[in-house]
Length: 399
Image 1 (cartoon, rainbow, N blue to C red):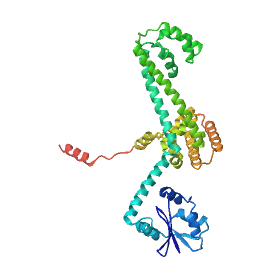
Image 2: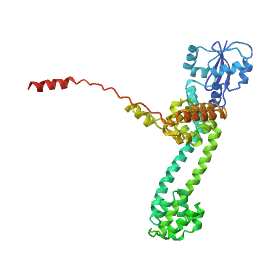
Image 3: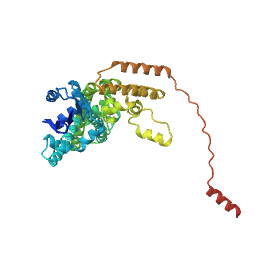
Image 4: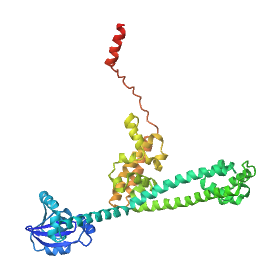
């Protein structure tokens, strides 16, 4: 009986504890992983073992490959596998993969480093991580825009304070700042910023009657630089947002359809990866992003949160307060199924979205009005006085 042994440096065949054939790996880390996954071809081994002699193998992946090639093969017992593992350096020396046991240990160490490096490279190439980085970039860009725009409004507001109350759009405000001092701003500048005619007339009148102070050319140059930075960040935000939508539709079409590209990417970032998200139950997905509120409810006994990041979902956000928990639960349930379909590359399943829409309509019809809850009076628990207090009372009474 042949013993077909998979090692880190190659495959060796023993017959009665004697090495009869070896098949070395050119790229040990890559070929070893392929054999473990059952994806290697191993045509040379097939020719050698095709004589009909029974074979035992020490690895499930190697077993599957040999069975596909119609070779009579069985899996080794746990005792035999443990013996091989403990005497690995000696087997490598007997197989000719190493000169001596010290050389074998050195080559095993090099193999371990190579394997770890290949796994890090494989993980780094995962599209999930790139989507996570993109959505984090989008959120951080929003924070930078908000902080910079606040500083811009305060600084330029010293020169044109009325503009802050009349223009809510950060983009439009920045475009007006680039026009320069208030006396140099024309109607065309307001129109180019995208304001309607009625607002253009109002801004033109306010500009003439502004009570703001003068601004020096140096200060104006810095303020305009801030405004240009904000407009550039808006362009970056638009590019990143489009990239997230493309990547989500490509890598997670069902999650994107159920949750939307942005919310789905934020849920994915909070979970860590697509596989982790697929392993999560719907109840966990429902409260992702509300961990503090969840643990606070467990500690204090208050009501647990009904939603976390899912509050940003358009359907949940637009629903009345008493419907949000039920709709969030329905959305989380479909999102959990969608993540599992996407992990196994099942393609877009329109049925998930259709069933979710039907469920949301049922909730909206059934719970048009908030359900009145009966307030239950909590039973009063009589606490026993401590023995220390009773003793002290007795002493005082004796006085």
